[in-house]
Structure formats: C-alpha cells, structure tokens
Image (cartoon, rainbow, N blue to C red; front, top):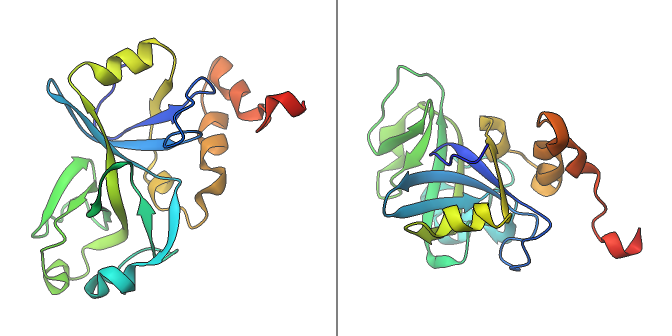
Length: 185
C-alpha cells in the first residue's frame, strides 16, 4: 500500500536514517496536493502536560506527558482525540477519520464535556511539502499502512513500531522481527 491519506500510518523503514524518524510511527492528519502533516506516535517526552497546558492535565490519556510530534514547530502543540460516540461533534473538534480528530487547544475544556474517550498532545509535527512524501515513499523510506485508534493512545508506545508491522499482511509482517541493530545479528 502506498496511497497516503489522513488517518493512515507511516512506518519508518530500516532505510530511513534521519534521527527524527528512525523507527517512527507517524499518524497522518492532513494530506492534500500542497503536502502532508502528521505526528510521531512513539516519542513520549518526559515533560508532563500539566507543566505547559495545565487546563488539559485531567483530560489527557496516560502517560500524561507531551509527545514529540515531529521536528516542525516544536514550540506549538497539536491535540489528537478520540470521541466516545460517532454521533458527537463537540466544539473545537475537527474529524480526521471516523471518531479520531484534532482538538483546538484554545477550546475551553469544559465545552468538551464527556465527549472525549482519549486525548494525546504532541509538541511539533512532521510535515512534507508537495510531492516530498511521495518521493520518500518511492525511495523506500516509509511503509504506508492502516491505523487503529488504539495505536495513537497506547500507554507504552515503545513497541508500537514492531506491533504495527506484526499485524501487516504478507511480507511486511516479517520486518517486525528484524533486530534493532542488524550488525549485532
């Protein structure tokens, strides 16, 4: 699968050596002719959300830390949320796919009520200009695979890369067994 769309995952291949993306799993949030934007799901920071966005401290999913969403605009934050119900459409929510979407962090938490099932906040994002991502996929830097909402909100994302690869059909699943350092194999 190589067609990228919002709600899909990019999974770094062993060929991708950029330290920002080694073994990264990226949730795509926006893809159009002008480029693409996503957040890295498996890079928790040690910074508690309460220290920078106190109003959201009781709403975020464990671990209650900011995640490093990518190398672009790291001083900004994006919030990805999962709604409890597909029928809900709270103020400040923009759907990405199904019940998964973005929350405007300027929205008062009280207006969201009990609409949110899960929420994760990312400092920065991963971004690509027009045709840049397609070129990286063609050169073999990324696998493009379907996402599960649970991928976004795992309490321990350290094995996310392997778990996502393991559930893929055919030869892609074999990649989940590669050693962290093939030179030590």
